[in-house]
Length: 72
Ligand SMILES: [Zn+2]
Image: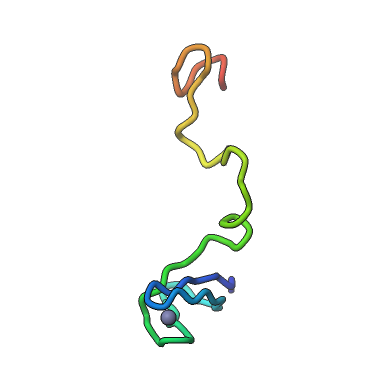
């Protein structure tokens, strides 16, 4: 089971919680269920150069197509 990091939208607390599918944790500070999951501490705070590989929005520099023989 993965441990996810959550941010409370009510009080802004950030906490880690071990979650199962379909369950949502509550804030340990204010007991609010209004929390959102953060991707990861490292992905959020580090400057991610380029975000390459998240897919879909790359375009070829020579033909402006998203899929051509040159860029693929
Ligand atoms: Zn809270």
